[in-house]
Every structure is written in C-alpha cells, then in structure tokens.
Image (cartoon, rainbow, N blue to C red; front, side):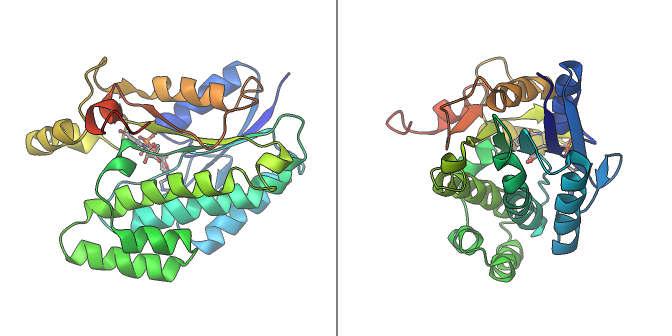
Length: 258
Ligand code: NAI
C-alpha cells in the first residue's frame, strides 16, 4: 500500500537516496531541505522548523505514515547542535500527531557513529533539557577551546539519547509509533567529500571510524536500512540505534556494550 513519508535532507546524499527508493516503491515523499525540495525550510532555527512542520502537514492532509529526520551538518561550529538536535526533535515532535493518525506509523533519525566519540557533557545535557540557548553557549565554548568536532558528536549522542528516552512514552510507543536511528560510519556524500580531498583529514577519519567490513558505504546502503525501519514490517523494534558502519562501532567499543 502506498504511504506518505516526510523526509528531511532530500536535496543530497542519504536523504536523496532514501527519497528515490521510496518513490520507486510507489510512496509519496514530502522532501524537506534548504533548497530543491517540496518544502524549503531552514531546520536550524525556530521559524524554519515551524514552517516545515506546517507545510508538511498541509501537503500530507494531516496524516503521515512515516517521518525520517535525515538533514544534518558536520561543521566544527555550533550549527550541528541547531540542525542535528533541535531541528530533528522539533520536526519529529511537530509531526508526531500526524503520525499518530496513520495505520502503521514509523519514525527514524539518522544518527552517527560520531555519537560514540568523545562528547561535551554540557552540550548534551542542555540538549536533553530542551535548552537551546544553553546548548549553543556550551557549543561556542567548545569551539573556542579548539574541540569544534565535539559539537557534531554531542549533537548525535544527544539525539540518540533523546529517542531512547521518548520512544517508550504514551506519545510514541503508546501511539503505536516505533522510533529508531540508523547510525552510519563513513558514507560517500557531499558531507564527506572535503574529507576525501584532504589526506590528513582522511587519516584522522580512518582512525576514528575503522570500517573492516566493505569500507566506506554508499548512501543507498543507509537508505535501504532506513526503508526497512520505517516499513510496516517493523512492528516491534523501537529505541534502537543501529550502526550501519562497516564494523566501526564493534571495533571501537568494548564487546560488553551492545
Ligand atoms: P549531505 O550533505 O549530502 O546531505 C545533508 C542534507 O541536509 C543537505 O541536502 C542539506 O541541504 C540538508 N540540510 C543541512 N542543513 C539543513 C538545514 N538547516 N535545514 C534543512 N536542511 C538542511 O549529507 P549526508 O551525508 O547525506 O548526511 C545525512 C545525514 O547523515 C546527516 O544527519 C549526517 O550527519 C548523517 N551522517 C552522515 C555520514 C557521512 O559519512 N556522510 C556519517 C554519519 C552520519
């Protein structure tokens, strides 16, 4: 049965690959992005987030079968906190009532292996408290201290923790909505292009994200995993962060963590 799925980040990379897969199987995709999308909005700020939610609801007629929050940035600035955490949470919270009206609603987030890397506790705490000004202040401090990469890892850790906290509540599990994340390793998209062009960065990335199984992934690999997560077949999996990462997470973390 054809379904209506809202996907953010459809102008590029993983979001574009997922939108193509879903459209190929007959679903209606409502793409959200800064540009080249059905709904053009900046998920980095409150105005764009509210407009994105309103326009998606309008296009969907008030009922959505799936939402995938894929849009993200990896800059060494406070921006990842705005887009990857507060943008994701606002989109999912805003569209949740429309999901609750569907027969087999599903939601997913694109996290990252970076969520397992060192994070800044103040950023993560402020995110989970829903305090965006405090999270941005903490992120500015981290950038000034020369650890700008931690704004990204912190945003991804926080969003994974957020979904594990809310997935079992009446609003999500109680409304029959599974909520999970796919956490990729290194995927060849516009986001990672500059890293591949810089030998020093590539060396750092290979050490931070070892991928013994098949190496770097194509966007389609992540899109296929997302497709299953948001399919009606996923009736019982919720609150999971699934590493589709060529073995990076299993290489990096102790085997007792699972
Ligand atoms: P990409 O750069 O190809 O696509 C990201 C999309 O998000 C772009 O179309 C961009 O315009 C959109 N976007 C960025 N900021 C936005 C904003 N403020 N409002 C609306 N849309 C915005 O990157 P890619 O690789 O497809 O990334 C997708 C997701 O996958 C991101 O959340 C990223 O953090 C995550 N990821 C990517 C990895 C990789 O190696 N490429 C690894 C792990 C996670």
